[in-house]
Length: 237
Image 1 (cartoon, one colour):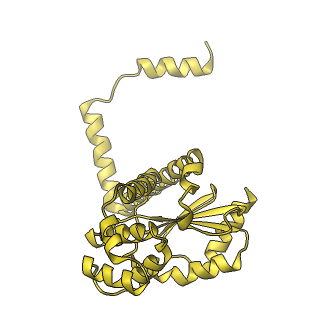
Image 2 (cartoon, rainbow, N blue to C red; image 1 turned 180 degrees about the vertical axis):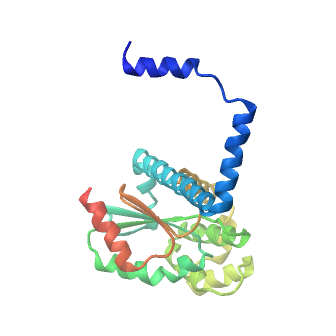
């Protein structure tokens, strides 16, 4: 019998702990926790880190399996070089303060990197106001006004209403009546649902969230230098 087989046999025949032994083990653990409470906090931290690592691994697996769909977008939502050597996907909510603060940073990033392809995925995750803004932006895209409406709404501090949206549409040279009619169109709903499905696929839990090629996923507001580092890693493959 091999050493491994012998150990297995002993394990199979070893008697279970008696109730008294189990109680002694519990008492030892309780005393240890009283003497050093950090044992419990360390254990909780390890569990959280393990769960986070698994979530990140699962998210990247989803990205790599679905990268063609994730990096695909209507022409109006693609910025920079349409044939760029690396694609950065940004999931953003137009009502998100962090997303709004990053608008000039993203503009500068795209302008500074002639080989970069950036894809914007509008997702309403914060509130009903986010839904209305998202619908308005995608409805504006149906008359060539995606970027104008996106910027107008993301700079606006007034709570969105249909009347406010129509005012902004008119101010930016769009047909306000058509935009209102297109808000609840099947095309707008389909695009929002597609973006949300991909967001769920990566386990998105906040905006903005960036996907750099198939190399990394980074949530939250980032500096331009941080983005450039992620892009550099993505280009390495």
